[in-house]
Image (cartoon, rainbow, N blue to C red):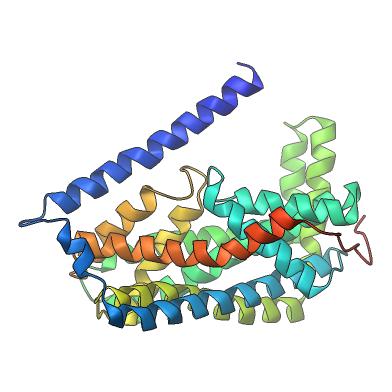
Length: 332
């Protein structure tokens, strides 16, 4: 199979993974008793504008803190760009996340843009910082689900089962970060891979491990932990206020318990833009909290619309172009 055929095959699989769950989401909605399309319009009113505006504000603030975290990680890799310029690149990445297959298109675009700023040698630095930034955000949002599960849902027989995915995901992330940042574990992984990988690939893997080890700094971990706490809290609040916008007065603890699982599924490059699996999972989870199928799906779509609106700044930045800043120091 040539590269073009393989690309089409991967897209076809993602299309199926998107459409099949979307069909079940639709079926769950229309199978509700007395379902009518007018139910959708009744969810919105003039009172929806204020929580919707707050959701926009929350996501906007989260993008500022997330970009600052990305900047700190890039600087540890020797890439020094102004915050204002990185913010533009960050928003361009957000725009591409909405439309490229999978939910990692924006990350690929950010790595490419960093390469354009710093030259060929900065590809590895941009890749390492961007991947670590994404992984740490998912790790931290998992902490929220784990904490909410232990504090509020561990003694609820109907909800306890949803705690276990967070536990295993948390342990998986801990093992991953240990492997990436620990010299001993990293050397062991490199030794194992040296037995099965070609020499050229082996050199790249070792170089990648060395890059990740540059993040071994207590000060850096404290900084990115505080920034991740702010970023992920604000992004969960986006869903909370979108829920209020459609008349769902649900305790915020449910959002901190469920949305992390939805976010992790959305981050997997298995569908187009995260559609389908995201809505189906949210519909299934929030049903346990008594939220109707239509409302739970609309909350997700409204949160996506908030993200789309803000990412339009990235679209304008991408289309208008402009002169690029140069990195003050290029990573080797």
